[in-house]
Every structure is written in C-alpha cells, then in structure tokens.
Image 1 (tube, rainbow, N blue to C red):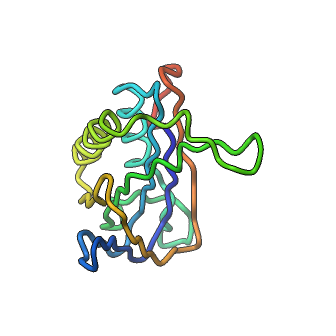
Image 2: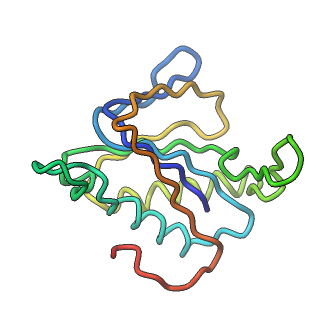
Length: 156
C-alpha cells in the first residue's frame, strides 16, 4: 500500500461538475492499493497517517497532527499511485489491486481512518475526478507499507 500525503490549506473533489467532497486545512491522501495488501497493512497506514506530526506548532516546528490543528482528511482512491516506473517510459500498473477488491479495501481504509477524531471526506472510487488543492508548505510525504511487513509501531 502506498499513500501520497499532502498537507493542504484547502482541497476539493469534483465529479461531473459537482463538488462531492471538500476540506479546509488538513491533508489529502492519494491512496494506491496493491495486489498483496492486507487489512493489517491498511490499519498500520491509517494509524500512521492519522498520527503524522507534520503541522506546525506555535514555534514553527512540525509537532502537531491533523487533530492538533483541527484539520481534516480527504482520501482519494488513485490506482496510479501503485504504478511502477523502473522499466521503460510507460508506467506499469501490474501490481495495482484489481478494481472490485480495491474498492472494498479503499472503503475499509476509510473506515479505519474514521476511527480517529479527524473528519474524513472521500473521492469517488472509479469516477473521473478533478482534484484541486492548495498545497501548504509544500509538504508532501509518501507513506507505504509492503504487504505483511513487520510489526513496527505506526504510532511512534
């Protein structure tokens, strides 16, 4: 599982000229699911993302998580995040999870995110989405967890 995380001052998702989700300050997650991803990987990533301290405190240090700044999460399913670019010039999506299973896993991931106290909005799985965001910083991180990798603490 691979998630591109961007700190934003605002973001929204539009489908068919209709805004289906929007947030003010917080983070946008572009979620890429891979064939071998398991529920425990999604739990680890959800916990890691919720706890990311990449918002600035009063001293300008990145010490606060989204809850600490009253932020929100906008999770956007994005199979291209699972793409590989090591060979050739055309990305390979061979490792991306098949759509039916990926939709179920994305919904599970969102449920796991919602177990925290930070509001969560979502894009629409399988839709042609237009995502607009105002990057804050810019701060962009990649959070990934290979299927069944270790038992490391996502909250540390």
